[in-house]
Amino acid sequence: MIWLFIIGIIVVLMVTHYAVDEPRIKEQKNEQEKSEQEYIKSNHITVTAQYRYASDYYTQNINWTKGIFYRFIVDEPNKKIHILSHNGYRNAIPFSDIIGCEIVADNQIVGGIKRAIVGGVLAGETGALVGAMTAQPHIMSYSIVIYCSNLQMPTVTIPLIKEKVSTKSADYTSAVEFSQKVLASIKAIIHING
Image 1 (spheres, rainbow, N blue to C red):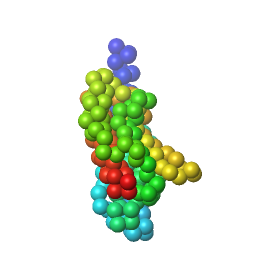
Image 2 (image 1 turned 60 degrees about the vertical axis):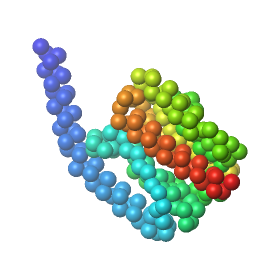
Image 3 (image 1 turned 120 degrees about the vertical axis):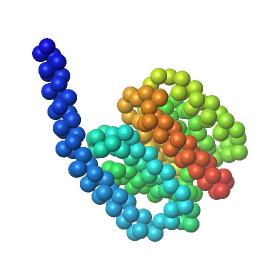
Image 4 (image 1 turned 90 degrees about the horizontal axis):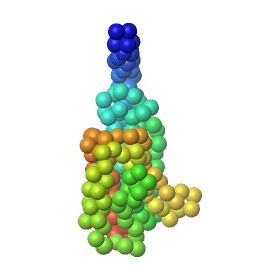
């Protein structure tokens, strides 16, 4: 009986903590949106295409530090991609620097493209590999790695999942959709810059 009482108190404290935290998280999101808009305006970015990824922690205002948010912007007139995150991370990569992109799940490459193999049958292969990954009940990590011909910054990693999640979860589904869109954009950029 005591255990039920203790568990009840823990649940009440957690709910109260998140309810108190929610207004602060919403304010942080508003500040983040303003910061992104300032970045776009001050860098004269033309948003040709953009994709967003947000984890459940982020979208449901549960935990700002555990939440993950990325915004991937293609700026075709200025020939750059921009990667923005909720924690203030900002990165601009010229199209000419991009030489490849891979999707990595649980330390296995599940999709990718490199400048030397543009035009291959990667779309079918990528779909099959990502499909094989969903046969697993959970995943521990999922990220996008962009390769650049820049010795100071040869790789840019976008970590979408950093802890155990179900492959049936919204976080996993969103990560796969976001990564496929980013991969397709990178493939088009590499093809254009051939």
